[in-house]
Figure 1 (spheres, rainbow, N blue to C red):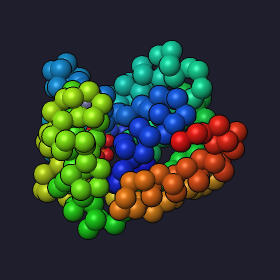
Figure 2 (tube, rainbow, N blue to C red):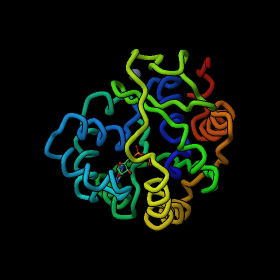
Figure 3 (tube, rainbow, N blue to C red):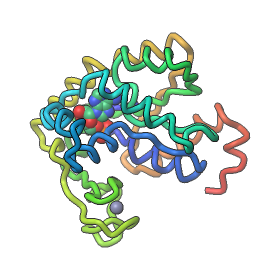
Figure 4 (tube, rainbow, N blue to C red):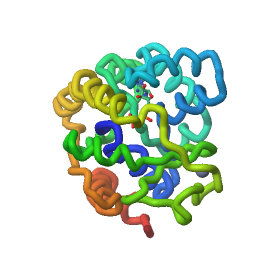
Length: 217
Ligand code: ADP
Ligand code: ZN
């Protein structure tokens, strides 16, 4: 977990590649649904465009369906952007899903606002970049699939401030929820994404010593 733009998505893609487990991002699923104009997408768009959270029952339904797919039944997975409210966390508990560790990437609000202005996303595959901190090879197309890089609808400064408010009000209480169960670890989000990765990997090495030993970069 972490504020919008804290680097959750980027770090979860890196972990996913390193350990060969799926990264499940509710934000990416929701954005794909919006782009494809599905019923769920139309509903979600009304919330996401304003910087509000999509209703819990919708997001819980998305996760329930996604976690039933084969790739999530093998060697675990990373959840990126879920749970984001206490009821969503309770729903995970009720599904009988045991979380190994919750990593919160901490970045002060001022830095978030600055970062978001440089964020770009691939319109085809959803990979994220930053014009300064994580640029694509040629600066305008995706390294992974060649798609065009665009500014997300909800990355405009006004919407970012709303999303930060929502984060503090609705998502931050989850830190206490997971602190109580002893699952919470916090890392300070660094300017360079590779430096954040080092901190995240140190936490994972502690929790999963065997997997970390097999990591060859
Ligand atoms: P960020 O973390 O950078 O805000 P995401 O890509 O994770 O962006 O999410 C984009 C939008 O999708 C959110 O602003 C919200 O409207 C919706 N969303 C994503 N995950 C959830 C969730 N777990 N619960 C409710 N809404 C969500
Ligand atoms: Zn792409």
